[in-house]
Length: 480
Ligand code: ADP
Ligand code: ADP
Ligand code: MG
Image (cartoon, rainbow, N blue to C red):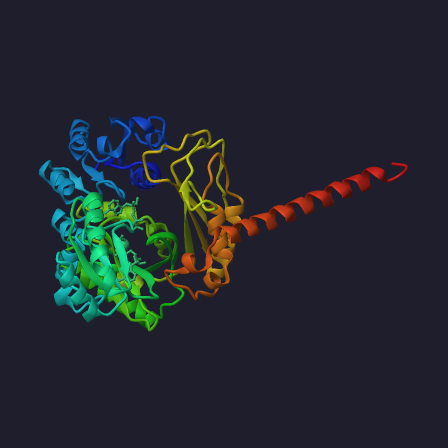
């Protein structure tokens, strides 16, 4: 493998290219007209404009991307996450054009991309599932009946859902019909597939997911868990590894379950099996993400394994040389997704020009980003600016380092979720490890953050005043 095209943008494009460069592999960047001067373009050995700014005219144009790959004699395509990463047709298009798709076979993507097909695939593997149905429901009357059997509250979910979208909680029978209609129409417009199904709504769950790697020689390993319970609207905002709640026994059980899920779909490469864990530490299979995940760096920190390097090796048809028994958890890592969103104003997107952009540096700090000072934040794509990752010997150390790193991350020109991240890290519920997926809903209000920010500002003003007075004192010393 001599040349890889990265079919993505921003931080993940750079993240993938860094490893490719390290391995002596040439890189090709694609970019939209809005990303002409983006850092991922400068970072690559070669770059090609793929189309206009909207992603359906550029980053989602599989046909154009394949054409570029062939013209530049690319050996493999890495899809990153989002965009075409979970598009089975694109993986197949690569296969047909003799370009290696760095990821699983299109068949596995197809199975796991549909939450119902995924449930069906793992059915015979003795994996605990969230109580619910394993087929699409169309008739609202039938939905009411099933909801009674499962017991309220229930969750209506889109089979093709992703990114936290297409889910509706229903508390009472009288609301089922109305919510079903909305869920179907939402699923149709967001995913082009209106299939919905029902699950029991687990009221106080934690989101625990297992990283796995599988090669072409029957080896499947798990790389422990990540906890992603701090969420907003079912989307992860702060992740960590390991989880503070798992015991070694539970970790092993969940790891084995994840390996079975990978087996059920004949998996290849890096993937993540997501579970919910209830208050009694029962775990339930949620879904499998058939790609590199946003929060993969926390696993890299605690295991010392470069997951992209493993992906590339597996795609080159190499054996995984690591052994499960050699893998150990070392220390603790946290990741904050830094979004250009205003936490004081309902997390509304806050685009603008980054007049100041200075990242924190130091031992145990990693910033994966795709921005630089002076850059305009494009309105067309996900508003994630970067991922701030910290690593310490203990959880407390990683949290403390995260707070310091947030304070040393200087961004002017857009509101970001940095202060929100600090709020989470300082919160007693988070620090004690006693929280669930409702952390943000239960504890966060803009008013609380505002108060904290004012206290900090007040303190800063006091310190400034003190320094000022002291300087005056020095100046006033008579006879000097
Ligand atoms: P992860 O599971 O890696 O934490 P997310 O669920 O946050 O990732 O999604 C990663 C990226 O992919 C985000 O930019 C998200 O918007 C996008 N994404 C994930 N699934 C879908 C989907 N089915 N449709 C559209 N975008 C998706
Ligand atoms: P997506 O494809 O959007 O990532 P998931 O099925 O992985 O969808 O669920 C995303 C999040 O939604 C979970 O992390 C969890 O917080 C919540 N969720 C999903 N299913 C349930 C459920 N049955 N009960 C409670 N919460 C759920
Ligand atoms: Mg998910």
